[in-house]
Image (cartoon, rainbow, N blue to C red; front, side, top):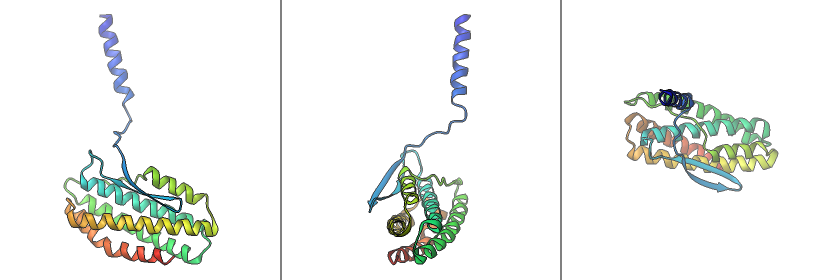
Length: 187
């Protein structure tokens, strides 16, 4: 009887220990470093469907663009960089809304996770520690690298994606991200 009681208490403790914890997905990344700024795009984990992995990468990319561009309001020196950053906040907020809509239209519905990769967070932290011309250069480098990686991912998913609504989303974003990349190259 004493052993049964201990077994029940042990099982209950193990069960409660797992409460509130989210299942962790292994994160793999494709990382590039440009002028001390690391840009990383998540690569599909073995547990995520290709559609979920794409939606998560797109959401993280939008969040990175918005957060890094918000830093430009206070850290940038160049009026061109500040104007570009304002445009990126608007465009990536719009992109996020379109992504959420496209993901919800999937069957079954997909919920994009905008969790930044560790490298994206590291890049944000690095940008936050810079100001003036140093910030402008690092921000421009991050924007060029980030938009190129996003463009590559959009083209790939638009060509061979497995979720029709996300595939259409990717296809519609290719010319927009191409324009952003060209603007970033001009910074």
